[in-house]
Length: 188
Image 1 (tube, helix red, strand yellow):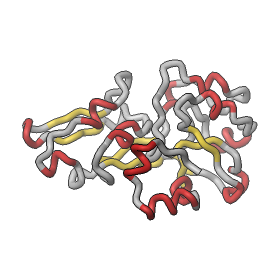
Image 2 (tube, rainbow, N blue to C red):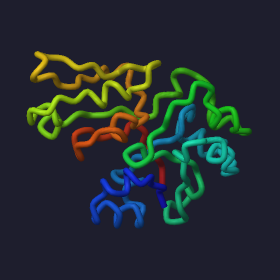
Image 3 (cartoon, one colour):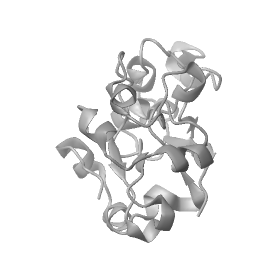
Image 4 (spheres, rainbow, N blue to C red):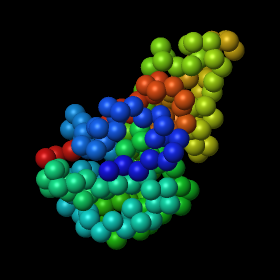
């Protein structure tokens, strides 16, 4: 089950809690998000030792594992950035802790997913000035900029820079304004 901080727990709806308990959020639409540095899915499944050293190395408890209901994916590490964001640590302790090479320190492997904005749900669309998503996008990434006139500024995403860490979602005060666009298909 995903871990929530107090702020996140109060933002959840009853339906979201039920989904998490049944782990539907993790594997919906046959997509999942692996930790930073994950190699291709087939090779990842062959190399991952399910040792959980990446989980232990993550000081933010962002990494969890899949249950037995996911078959051969059982105990493999995943991220659910919509609930617990990856903080993109500068030294990537999760990658360094991986003894098997399933997580590798390569710029092409760091990208986990991307986000998508629903501007209709954005606070800025309703007259409240907010730039929380842009301010919390990691300084090394800065994939989100605020564009438009001051009173109608909206977040704009540079897809090529977004790594899918989920920090923008974590700090956003408007539910459903930002969602993760899963990019890696898993194999059952």
